[in-house]
Image (cartoon, rainbow, N blue to C red):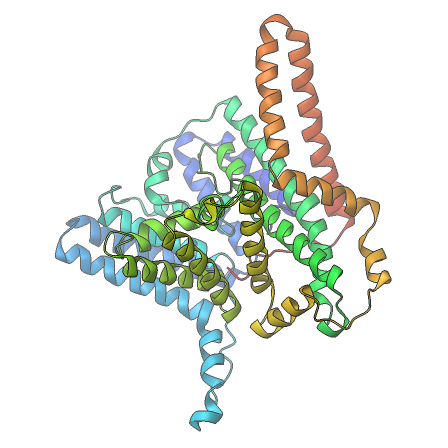
Length: 482
């Protein structure tokens, strides 16, 4: 079930909200846990048992850690929990990848290839496994108390707003909210507003950009012209940003409706002036997870320059592999890691010595080139795509493809996407909100009219998204690899 599906919007969410607020406060966590399990089971009941197993297993490991936090026995429990969680993730996410790579060596090493494991990737397994490990580590570090109620731990791991698409919520950030939380009308209204904005990003912007990106990346290399390749790459960069940030907005909004406050996950990364800044703005929950639970424990930048570079490369190797079981994801991670090393090697003088517009150009160029690897199914296809981008193409400029793409609707959404990715609309919204507050005392009618216009705008977005979802079948879920 997707947030951007009619079933979720018009059936599941209204029923869950009604049941939640009509239920006694003490039973609300159980309602949310049950709803989360139903939400996950919608995509396949068999894999729901994996989620339940993860909850039970990590509950008992957490209890073992919590008996004597910081002791040798506690460390043994933690090590066992981390290893088994990673093994759990490895089997279901990377078995096909590992077997495929071993089989590629079968002729060279003269052995009979293994059969296809045929394991289907459970949606969201990377997210909820990382959250489970966050719980174990936080308890071991005594950043949070051990959770004695298995249902509350289950709610943390399985909470449906961020179960299949993030953001990755660390246990110590939400432990107190699981125990007790309050909801007021202002917070609930904010949640609705944030959800609708995220829905608009996903349905109206990401989906429209994705259709063009699919045309470009779905065209055979010999028939792909340079202009279409560049348009496909730019639209893919916009698609992945609005899809990821849109889902995060919806998750944050849903969380607020139920009384939870999730941390921000995207902060307009395409306005960055370095790769370092880009990763401070892109998928913040993931980058901070790797920083706090991998990079810093490895020594971070505290040991030596060489060790710092090794730590960065290792972290971004794991980051790439986390996104998908493919060498193209691994190379994507290496690219970002190498440019981070370059910036650190110059003590951040590069790219800061450049004129500010050139800093933006440098960052966007690196990010865009890396997105080719992220989107391509193989490194070979990515390499060929680079060739087309930089003129190594004999394909004639296909006006039919261009006419298929460049209609008024696409041009409108393309312009909106570019302006939104640059943060123009959020800056305008902040300015209008400040203006409304300043007018409220002396010109209450104008202030109230401004708020009514905002509400009408949100309703129009919701109506437009609903019409799109009802009349169009194109609604890709690009988290399926995660």
